[in-house]
Length: 284
Image (cartoon, rainbow, N blue to C red; front, side):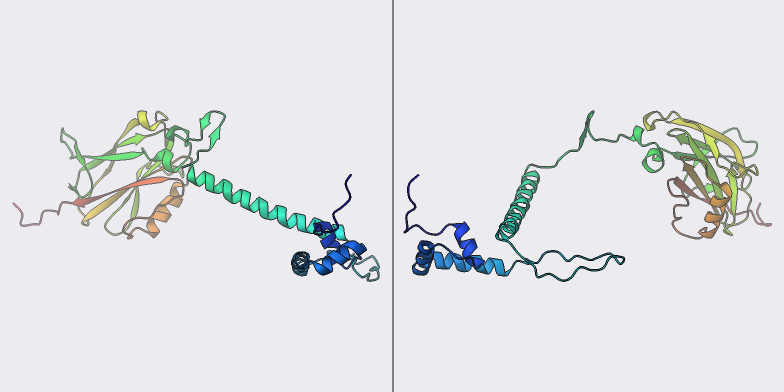
């Protein structure tokens, strides 16, 4: 092993010791006093140490234990070196994370994957509410008393007193359905179901929007000649709901335009119909 060059600059270890006030060997002390480069490095080490909190973490004694007498903190040279290593390694970790994020954003969109491939959720897997019921629809048909033909009516169409409504429901799967009406006075009435029960009517479709089932409900209500129009509200839910609660909720917003959604997780369709004016006493 070759002897150390007396003119060589001090090592980082020696500078650490000098910054903490430790005595250096005579040769190193003499070099330090005469070397501007080592003096500058020593100043940088001292400035760095000045920004560190070298105190040990405070100890809070339990209430039942007599607190220990205060002891002046003793900071060893190794503790300072470990603190520096943690700071430097922490900064490197932040830089590495930033670089990884930069690579991800430059590489285009990322895809989450499972064992079966990319994480996708086709409509057939959305089992409850919302998108699963997006295929639900209602078509309205009116039939006058004694008439042989049934005509389809939709938003803004005119219906006459005595005409009866029938519905054709498009069902994406097993759903619970209520069809309610609002007359010109804001009164809510039942179209389907019409019994005194408190649950929506359950209907079963094909189970997939691409092969939805159509169900017809005949002769539900007949129009009178009062008022200027009616609104028909069809509601489909993935699970049983209280029909009375839906009626009450609709009654509270019956004059709103447009009608808000009455039940979370359900879908609803609204059709406004106009009424044909009743014939006056002078009509021929």
